Length: 119
Image (cartoon, rainbow, N blue to C red; front, top):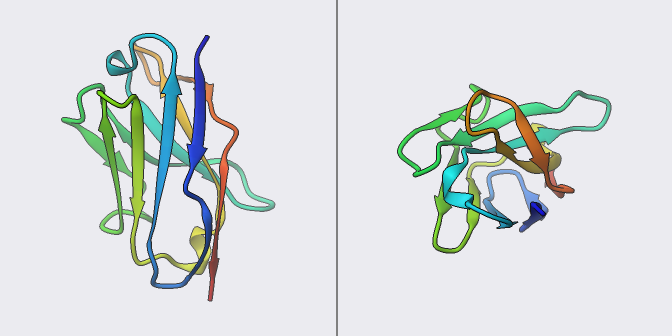
């Protein structure tokens, strides 16, 4: 059974930093690409960042490029999202997800962690 649990959210002032963590339980974490998504109130869920199985390839939404960094530790079955220079518009619930081995579908999701940036 695959389970994803996010942590590290909270309230931070604009310009501050947070590091989110997503703990993975289940088989073969190191075989899968992982991603972070977010959903702000009244908006659709949007892509934030993704990382391939070994951390050798990453991608980011334009809105977070240069401010956020995705990384993973396969020994700890954990993926991280370091968020710097936070803006009010980064306020959202952040979700981690596991991507299928082949393709771009994310088929397992965590419950999310709230990030609130005060202006």
